[in-house]
Image 1 (cartoon, rainbow, N blue to C red):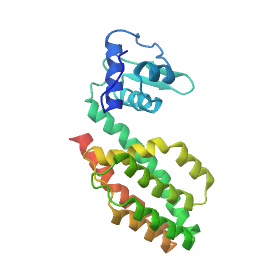
Image 2 (image 1 turned 60 degrees about the vertical axis):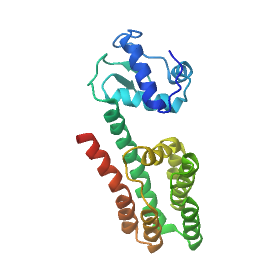
Image 3 (image 1 turned 45 degrees about the vertical axis):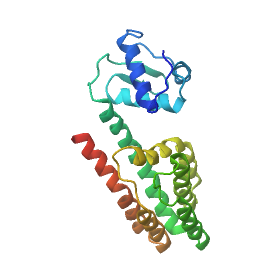
Length: 225
């Protein structure tokens, strides 16, 4: 396989794997090399390979089997445009993130201390607006804020799940800077803090859903257009 050098690595990795499929590298029903082997062959991270596989699964080309691996399902799939398939995968990532964020905010509203609120406001101020600056640094600052919300829940399982999903969370943050998705502004972030500070779990729930709604609506529009 060829080494990848383009900026959109997940897209390029998916196209590279599809190219190998069209070249009859594997037959339908055959198991593909594992994530580590594909990562080495394409010279990309395992996370990039994982995202590329998700794209091809959403197209009906690949199939993942729990505890077994990834298999070639079809050489043609559903023929969805690659950008559309990526949006479908991204929609699922935002749904998973929403589930974590909502429950964490609800618990945070019941368990927060004044020190927690001060910390959240400080991290939000440090986050600031993107303004076209260093993307990686901004994603890290935004992630730090949202992780602090999770930590305020005092639920160690939720905290662990968030850390485990850190790469996925970072991808959703970055997507609002790259794609035609609305980036939640400072006011939307501040509303989450205000709702947590109120001590009303339903208000915190609503604030997170309101925060995420424009992004989900934009993804739904892109998928149906």
